Amino acid sequence: MRRRFCSLIALMSLFMASILFGQTAPRWTALPNAPVVSRHNDAYFVTPDTGWIVSGNGQIYHTKNGGAAWQLQFEQGTAHFRSVGFLDARQGWAGNVGVGEFGATDPAVLYRTNNGGQTWQSFSQFHGPAPAGLCGMHVVNDSTICAVGRVRGPSFFVRTTDRGQTWTSKDMSEYAAGLIDVYFVHPDTGFAVGLTNATHDLSGGIVLFTGDGGQTWEKRFASSRTGEWCWKISFPSRRTAYVSLQRNSLAPIYFLKTTDGGSTWQEKLFSSNYYFVQGLGFVSETVGWAGGNSSFPTYQTTDGGETWSSAGFGARVNRFRFLNDSLGYAVGRTVYKFSKPATTAVAQHEQAHARQYALRQNYPNPFNPTTTIAFHLRERMHVDLSVSDLNGRHVKTMLQRVCATGENAAAWDGTNDSGESVPSGIYVYTLEAGELLVMKKMILVR
Image (cartoon, rainbow, N blue to C red; front, top):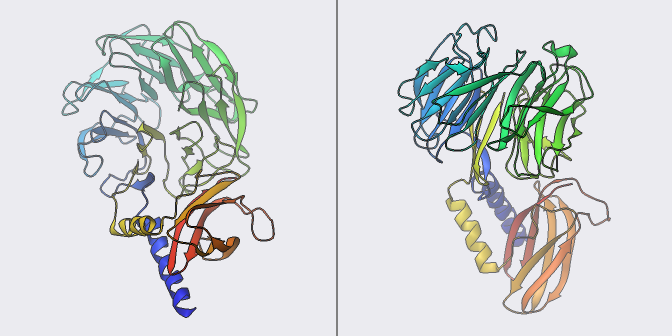
């Protein structure tokens, strides 16, 4: 019994280490060599390794190796860069908020590069009224870029359809006091989000829609409270999208969600307590993150925004950019990367145990409300299958009986031995069979 208990403790320690250092699921990590500033505002990657970030300090940094190292390519101290986008590895654009915002005195609202950022030049030749500043930018395809501005107004929409050779600009003051972010699902079909009043305490958030490339717009949603602005928009699919709502003070905090492609939007609760939300990004219709606060970490949801919990990373996060479902970047005080860590010796050890003892990964995972745990036995034997929390506290006895040779399974409904529901979190299931002892983790999402 003492040997079995010591083995269990040792395996639990190994398992905890694998959670911290050997996960194969994508997770967020702060890049150790990324520059730390007051806030990086945007990032754009043309390949998994090649990307750029821009900051409120008027700086543009470049990486060629997925964020392992960064080079300062450009610095314009009188500018406050809020957005960046590239058509390819050479052709890129950066948006400046313009004179009067955040101490910026540079009147050039766009900078361009034709050589991958080695040099940048200001650009001001707009067809239409010159925008006062630009905050949000979306690269729609290999020839079309759309951008909007600015926070606290005035509001403008700009667009190029010929790889930046010409830009058109539209005064948007009849629709909104200011615009902060933009996203197009098609070169002619898109959304812009922002504010109804340049005075924050008097403003509500607003969502605008265009179906003709920005020539005309219509209001799709206006929030029901004052003292907030729409800040970032994220479309993980054509039908589902989210918009963050920034409040400078007071609570509760809400966000917006659509499940019909932006035809209608619903206000949904983010937090009953105050949290300064700005950046928001979803990697799927249900899994996403929201950040912006300088004192508390970014929050995450795995159920489409129904519930949120601390993600344990990030300060002042303003933008999320995903290249696929297992790779992304976020910027704030520094740069954060969403990726699968390299397989470690600990993870390989865990995988070897799994193959040897044939304890399957539960399915589905994450789950709510029920998951199935399957295992394979080489011979008929007595089995103990149990669930514990990450601190090793017993939660549920699943099986305590003799099981047959071959495949076996048991279902867990997220309750303890008393039949009470347990909270969301990571749990451990342990199989003991003869001399075998092996465990795996699973995630319950309420």
